[in-house]
Image (cartoon, rainbow, N blue to C red; front, side, top):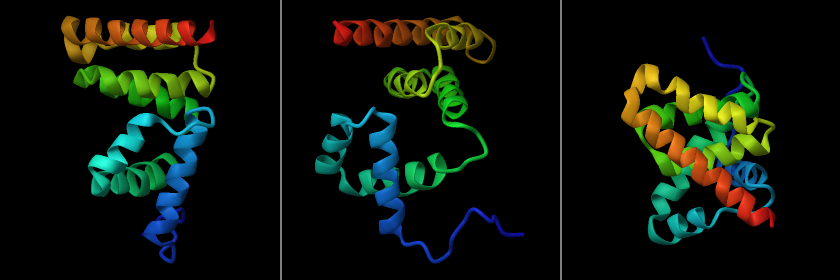
Amino acid sequence: MTDPRIDPTETTAMRRARGEAIVTQLSGGTRPASLDALDHEHPFLSHAVNAFAVGEIFDRDVLDVRTRQLALVAAFATLGLTDFIKIHGAYALGAGATEDELKEIAVLTLIPGGFPRAIQASQAISALLAERKDHAR
């Protein structure tokens, strides 16, 4: 059985271009500096992230962007990946998630990840929210 969302004629370059556009959109119109550094230092990894992770996975339409980003925040919180919590937390906020919803992710992290991961998640979310308030000034 084939997935109707997969276009076998699409090239990797097309997926990468779509990935770049998605990241720019998620970031509010500006390409994140972290991706520029990845391009420069690790071009193969950058290519894989943009063409596959973003160009193929983020482009799926089963979940809306808001739900997808909240799910990613929860996954990264459980894994203790605070930098990714902040990146995808910002994307979630940009897609309509609320601050309280992000904070609730930290609380829910207690179940699969325990107190240390929940505390890490809460700290990353607090840092993200503080950075956003500082930039708004």
